[in-house]
Image (cartoon, rainbow, N blue to C red):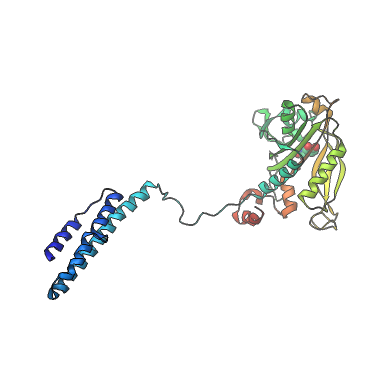
Length: 339
Ligand code: DAH
């Protein structure tokens, strides 16, 4: 019996398997219940008592060697599988953390959703614009200060290529192409040549809304504004409209909401007035409609524009505008629960 075991030991040492199926066949051949080693174990009963100790040792060695050999062959296949799975060895060993939405994206989405509930659909336009869409079509006089180099980033040597200073340019882009009724909400990034500080930045974000149809009135505008303020802040938010001036609207107004930080009682944020300004608005100037090929005797419209940073500050009390573009994850993580 010892001879047989020795033969088997040699045989096991030379085992190879080309694939996992062959390996499984070997395992069955040697180690299964009806396999070679089990059969030898059965024969062990007939071994004379004085040889049992020695034969037992050989048998155990055979069993162990076979098991080790099978494990060794199996490890080869496991390694091959890892390579085949294209595991990315440059990946960080630490768990990948879930990101959070940027606060400005959260607020932009909320604004668009609120106007979406009033039937507005999203429209977008280019950030690199021309004079016509940003200024001329919107009734800016030739010498209007907003065209001044102080405010606008012009592309060198070509004053007709510039970075848009407001999203009102999207109004023109849509009105030129589309017949009324038009009901759009236009979010986007805008640029102004300002020194960067805690309260100003050379780029920021705006949302523009435009509604053009027959018989659109200032009352419609006011209703939409009240709805927006209550949805965005709280049901008890009040609004107030102050006369103002914009080249592209007539009449024009600025809207204040009751300060949502002190509830209108007066605090440092609202400078003790109980009110904070959040947007500009008005009835689209007939000249603007005509510039875009819309008959101002048939159609009228309202427009409004607001800064997303300003609304975000009011909602989350972010004191320094620069935090929005620094992308410090400690700041961004504070908005995790709002996601
Ligand atoms: N475009 C203006 C700005 O950047 C905001 C604005 C005011 C937009 C009044 C409007 C509006 O549509 O009617 O300051």
